[in-house]
Image 1 (tube, rainbow, N blue to C red):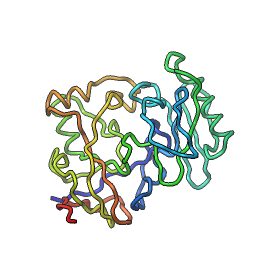
Image 2: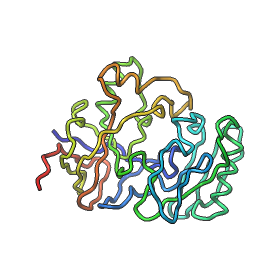
Image 3: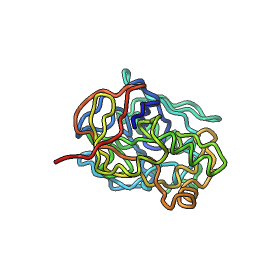
Image 4: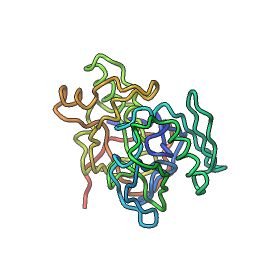
Length: 259
């Protein structure tokens, strides 16, 4: 059973707007390019950019805790380094998050935009370096969503789920619904790169938020448990060889990893 890459997304700032890509170059030990390069501390998190270590997402401004984050529309121009944030009723922000002034400016813009009750302390933009990324899993590199699984869940719930609720990097067409749940420790080809599956993705309250309306409207984790007996949707893969993955590229059925 093989599928193909139907969509590729990066999320430059953890919790904020997904951005579509036509292709991506992946390699072992490297973070997903342009993905989760920055995060916004909601009060001190203990994260040290000089010695980056995985930090629980609850320490940041993320959808699981603050649905209004989805109402901020952001975009990042990699060539110029310019980051823009816009929201209805708020002045637009533009700056470079690679520079202290830009990070401070976005934190100030976000402080004014969010509701005071959502803030646990001063907001601070922190940056990832090297191969580190602000992923939800300590070993997370690339997250993959099976669109057939999302459609099956939608049917069970009687509501059409936007796949972007699941904030994946690669979205795949052509796999059977939920086939990916049986692929732990197996190897697959994604475009011209090889990868191994190392974890299912357990879903949290972030998936309850409609990415368009910024309203918490559907109990997705509960529906997963009620209908399937688990709260997983998607898999994490770890690259084992470098290669390019583009829209339309094959992403094959995995085979057993051999020593």
